[in-house]
Amino acid sequence: MKTLRIALPALLLLACTTAESPIPPDDTPKVVDLRAAIGSSDVDVVGITISPDTQKRYALDSERGIYEMSDDGTLSLVLALEAFPSADESIQSEFTDIAAMGNNRFALTALNEGYMLDLNANTLLRHFCYLPDDLEDTGVYQMTHSVTFDAETGLIYAQPQTFSELDNRVVASSIGRFAEGNGAEQQWYALPESSFVAGALSVNSDGNLLLGNGPHLSVFDLSTQTMGASLSLRSYGIRDIKGMAIDEAADELLIVDGDSDKLVVLPLSVISEL
Image (cartoon, rainbow, N blue to C red; front, top):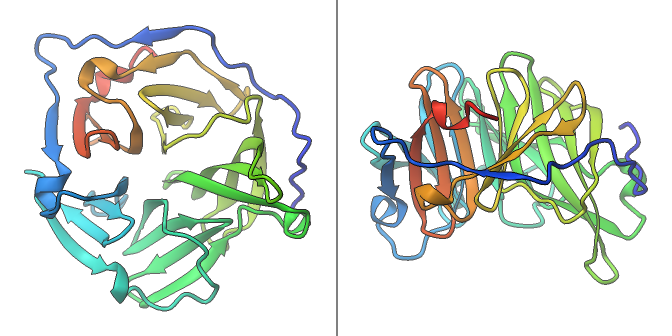
């Protein structure tokens, strides 16, 4: 693997202004109550994703497994967590996010590692290690709550924070890029604020990254390595973005709000100013 250093340079500037997204008269969001859809008062939906080949929508509950979502918001269990195939490497935490990669394959993230779940082959293999080799014995660990797959480029992106094992202090925050085929590490982008953590990540129509942090959305420009202005989704009742997917075909932005355990479906025009 290529080297990721703890002393990460500040390659981007965070905008200091935050726009508030008002609700246009005809843009009342569609809302799915995930507790009702799953049938429990205690759910932990940490990711929403759309398969690039079938356009099927999937959700991941960290304690239950993977669900397929119908157009009306009904959730059907595809694979329960206890039915997952045995992993080739020990999984050190609950899964934190999911990204559909087509052909019944899913990228899943947990502490330090990214896995590939292949439903056709019934395998769960470590696919990309977002904790680089040169950091494994240096007293740090990494956790990401967001992963996405860009089918156009065949690239996987994750946004981990680096922590000290000594006192669990946050050391750095960054974005990693990995190859689809073998999970090889390709590039790291350092974020200037170690406290920044994306609860969700998607690739927009320009090929840049859309990051959800609390109620805010920001675009990270991969070519200039800069973060654009932040957009607040509070007016839509969103407080804690834990999952996100862009459906270009349906012209929709799907947001999982961890505060209310609801899926909020917005028109893509909401992010047109970003």
